[in-house]
Image (tube, rainbow, N blue to C red):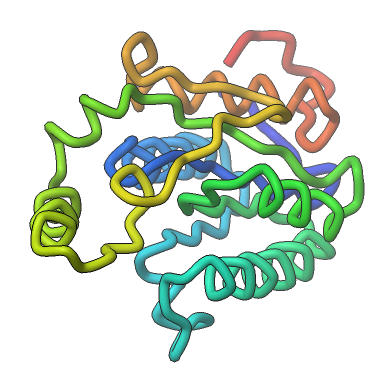
Length: 195
């Protein structure tokens, strides 16, 4: 079996609007890497926010503060030889640029989980879009990305996973290939097989 070795810690920020599939894709990628004995730390935004974002709301200023805390966390972990995956909305280029600046150049990658907005709204597994739209209809700001806050399409990213053509199962090998291409991972010297 192919063996993969972590050459240096690397942070993968998987971003996209609510219900884009960030958690599903990130979990599939982590599971795939773990089958090759790659140490992975996975942070799902919904869960991680409760840990590092206690008391932080959903205004633009709050989201910037949360981005700073996420960046501090993932940057610190890249000092160890682990692959760190953060799945969070990160809806502005300014947030993503800040995150990049907080990591060493060769230890950070943005992965855009691209899903059409109508598909996200149809999925709506947590009822977020429906609840937000109800608030808007009642004249109350919802502060929800994709409803009354725009998701800015990225002007910089290292990978795009288009969920209309890439399944979670296919995302794992694609991300592993990316990590190999940037030197964060390497194959065992005796192994020339493909992943």
